[in-house]
Picture 1 (cartoon, one colour):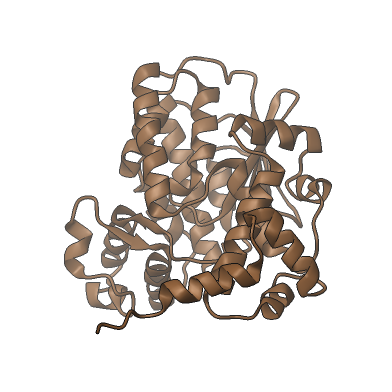
Picture 2: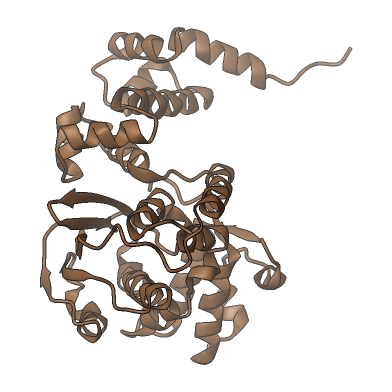
Amino acid sequence: MASWEWRRSITNSAILVEVAEGRGIGLAECLRGTGIAPELLITPGAEVTAAQEMELVRNIVTALDDPWGLGFEAGTRTHLTTHGVFGLAVMSSPTMRSAMELAMRYFSLMTSFSRAWHVYRDDELWLYVDDQDIPADLRGFLGERDVAALLTNWVMVFGTAPPVRRGEIGGGYRERLLPLLEQFEIPSADTTGPHIAIFDATGMDQPMPQASPLTALLFEEQCADLLQRRGLRHGLSGSVREVLMHRLNGRLTQENVAAGLHMSLRTMRRRLADEGTSYRQLCVETYGNLAEELLATGLTVEDVAYRMGYSGAPSFSTAFKQWRGITPGRFARAATDRNRPSVRR
């Protein structure tokens, strides 16, 4: 992600500290430089930024020399109920398919720092996970944690192993994940792209063990509120926004974005429509918000145009006026006036 300032539940950090202390790492060493107060770890409902949790992970991984299996231990301690209303929403979903769809919409409420999206292909569901924004020294541990949490929680909810037909692991991490994959008898191979888990989708319409549709809707409303409050992006919309943000220096077409997400243009349009948005609307929101943020810092229109990959101020000004209905110069002057301190007489 472009920024790690979005917020996460303190529960993830508390579990990490428990794992570290079990291996002889003291609380002070775990929290060094994170800005996390010790009392926060036992405060219900407390939150930290993603950057703070990531620094906590780095402290632990560095102190223990990043041993293989440490992330598995953290993942198996992360139960679905750890995630509060999100976990309750998943468990009360009507069917396995609806539970999976909900999990993908609110993926950022789980343990992962990665981007994720999914595509149905015949009788399979392909789950893509892209961890390239995560610092390289933390990917192994965090990959272990995510895989362990997914597999163990599936067993806890359904009482059976997840129907994963095969996995494709990128970044050279397959050997590290192999012990857990073999434990669940999941065939795997290396890949050069994002990680992929291919699920058997033929039984996805079976009812969930604790299905309660009305309860699921109530908890999903709370999940949506939580996402908004924490400043998180979600669903395919979030994945599209991330692609747009990471390709500012090259104008993207819808076809480019769909191909980057391993789906057809028609599928991407349909999925975005299901989420109540469109590619054009996401472009307006993403580029418009970024332009506003840059202009508000005092950068000139020319500087913002250059940073956003435009050939010059005129083309950027035309685009900005389409997004916001005013010129970027007028917006910048208004932002300056709003930020100018008032003078008391």
